[in-house]
Amino acid sequence: MINWNGFIKNNRSWRRRLLYPFVSVCVAISLCLTTAVQTQAIELLPFLLRGVQIYQLSNLSPRQEFQLGSQINDQVRREVRISRNRQITGYIQSIGNRLIKSSGDRVNVPYTFQVVEDKSVNAFATTGGFVYIHTGLIEAADNEAELASVIGHEIGHIKGRHLIKQMRQSAITSGIATATGLDRSRAVGLGVELALRRPRSRTDEYHADQLGLELLTDAGYAQYAMVSFMRKLEGRSSIPTFLSTHPGASDRARTLEQQIKAQPSNKKYGLDNTAYKSKIRYMLY
Image (cartoon, rainbow, N blue to C red; front, side, top):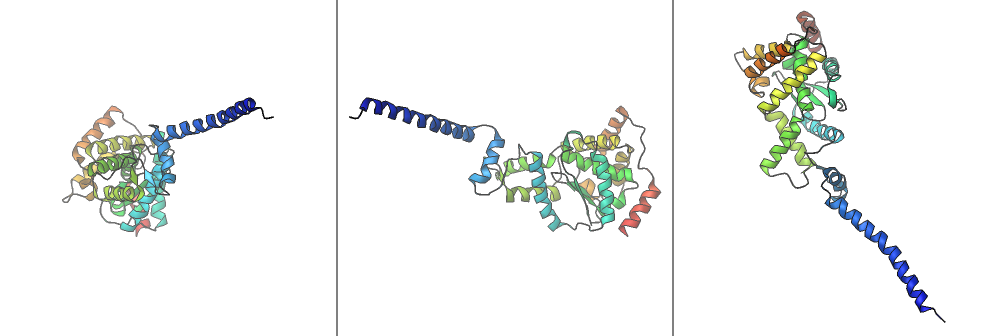
């Protein structure tokens, strides 16, 4: 004879044992999908969207910054002529390495310094540690300290995450950003456009100057080289690209002078004009 009461009790107990884990799993999934922490959503998106890469520009990790910068770099290299001259590239890299040793909280960014074969006096940076220096600017500098001041300024843009902020603002203004962020193609295209064709904001320029001056000082270079380079270019008959894409040069030079007076340094490295001109002449010609 079947004990129905015992069977029913055992059956109910079995169903409870299955129900509780099921409810726990449902709650966990619900929390993952509704959490306000953006980084968790970012990690899930590539799987949910079957490989579509999404960048949430307000919350990029250093690894994601480098990944985005690397993808932008691939596109930039199609639009500019990157020098294959190992000597001049190595020289720029050595100056950059000297500067980034004092880059504080951004030392985890792997910096890449490249030389653009272009006679215009210009330099720019993207994100994730990618810096570009034109040969025209290398030739325009009188000494290594002046060149280092420009490289430091561009590192300052990366430290300040200025391109990322500019991309985010531009994406919102133009309406191409979604609730999840930007897909890879749009993010890369926007990054290239902003880096090559649009100036930074006045606020970002002042900030990059400040950070660049700090790097220059900590690396032992002569502080005033940053000011002398700007002043020299301003006096030319035609405005160099470097200044036309970096507005407010006169005011920036005066601000730098005030900052130097407030925190002077007796370090004078990089002021040998003759040695510098001889070195770049050998490397470039």
